[in-house]
Image (cartoon, rainbow, N blue to C red; front, side, top):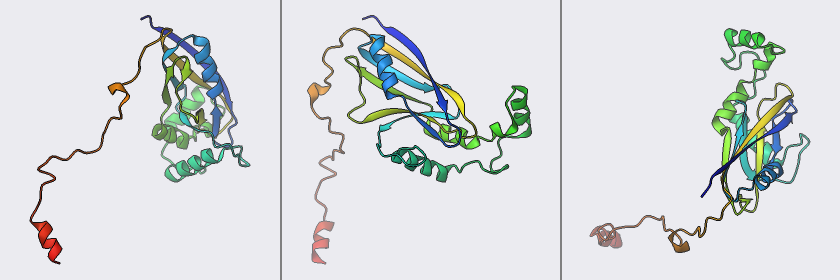
Length: 206
């Protein structure tokens, strides 16, 4: 069975004044379809340390921030865990050496390093997701959407999602494990663990 690898880069533009959620589901599905790979996996990876990838259902309703309700719920939770960087000194990072490094690489100002909240949220949330490809289709269930999240709201900037597909153009045959029978993962008690205990009778006397 021959293995094929396809890599693509999706260019995005984040708005900068609030966390940006990019729905890249259609783009990833198109890349999978054009790859010719029928069975394998696709990795969706952030090129940036302040961005994450999330697989979640579409919430349909949007608020005045152009965020889906579920996205804003998630942002509210992350803000409780990791508050927005709004005042100088809210976090230890960035220090003076890092700020000077930013100037060295021609950042437009020291303010661009005040994105510690974005870095920490990315650490907690993760920068990648992997999905299965079955018979040429992403196996995301009925409701899955793929979102590229830019937590860095300091400024508008271009972003990049890296897509790597690995798999085969061939059929893989029967996928059923255990002949398709439900695997019972519930705890199984031994006869000794289920044995009669004299305390049962004492309890009845009460």
